[in-house]
Image 1 (cartoon, helix red, strand yellow):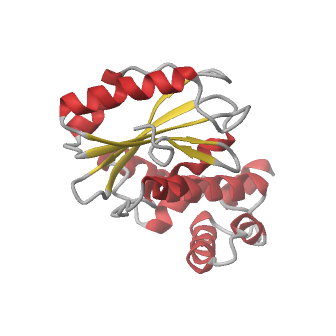
Image 2 (cartoon, rainbow, N blue to C red):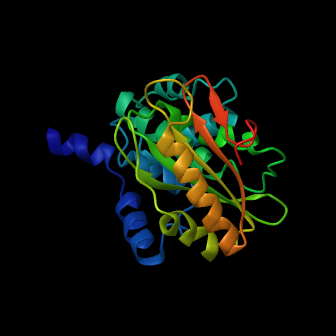
Length: 223
């Protein structure tokens, strides 16, 4: 009986897509096939390709923000499959939502790094910008402890130099305590500003974020 049920849930097309993707790269599958790779299998009543079509339709039409609930409403989509798809969608949104965004004020970058404020350890992020102050890349540079993270100018600027960045904005979160710079934050900011001057890269700001606040070195006249 188990083998019969497996024949319903597994699609002959899925292993083929896996093999073709492994051979040709992740750019090869169409959107529906990417969803199939995420799901892995369908159900007895719904082959994985049909399930993928329904999931893709929900993603395309979702406007309420309740993507997990809408995915779970699809027959054959339980908690695990719904969370996997929703997580992939959110990951893509976070990584690509900044494309071609122009930063008019350093604090404009906060919506793109705000999710780091929920981390329980300090995360140090560097944002590379081009001459028009459009975001080139947002990178996580280091992860520290609950109260500090160690950073060195060479770790911060190696990627912006490779990006041919004209400017950078540095950010880190404070998991606990007030949204105010420590002495170590002040010292590292001065060090990074000096390194940026030597490299000819504009150091626009160092921003500290918490769940409900932010602190800008620029806005407080500390740059």
